[in-house]
Amino acid sequence: MQQKYVDGSNGLSVRQLKILTFIQRYSETFGYAPTVRDIRDSLEISSTSVVGSDLRMLRRGGFINSQHRAARTVSLTQNGLNLLWKENYAGPDTAAKVQG
Figure 1: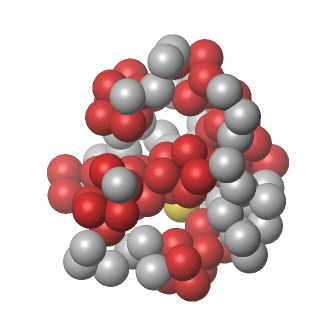
Figure 2: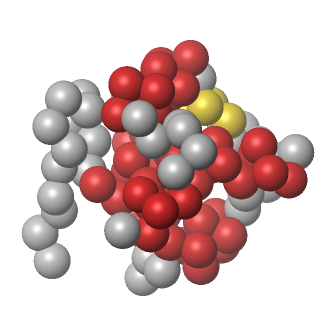
């Protein structure tokens, strides 16, 4: 399946933007970060390795921070938060945008 990319989002794919949004909303809701499996299951991604690959790309792009091989350590950087704000994914209707 060919990746779809979001215009003006620094080359991020739709899935990567959904992952950023999910991390932000999950952390806001529960007070701690999601696991790779939480992300996979909630966004219906085919495998944890696909999630891991997207997380590495997001980390390299400066959108998230995380500790290697440590659970629940992923967090959005200021760049990640700014991108979500710019894309209007951090607002109250985020869940609808992530599902759609």
